[in-house]
Image (spheres, rainbow, N blue to C red):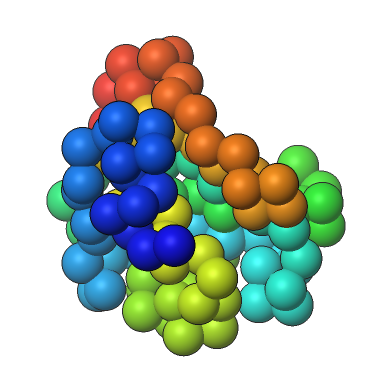
Length: 108
């Protein structure tokens, strides 16, 4: 399944991110743990994606900003989700994808 397939499955616009945009990641993302992803409306230099795992302790100071190409290189299994537009969420464990109107309406 590729990015077009994932977007088509949930009738979402195809909105790929540039590889040089920043993604917020928690501990566990690069270690292969299952991911909870959410794409927030964001400033131009950010992709909007926040990727967290069960290892995330709730302290935003432990989150890291990395370029999208680093995420795709380390976790090619996540690339299929990264073209979902602002307001979408996913769980990698069960491949669930859904729209969250509250997230979509947040100010950047």
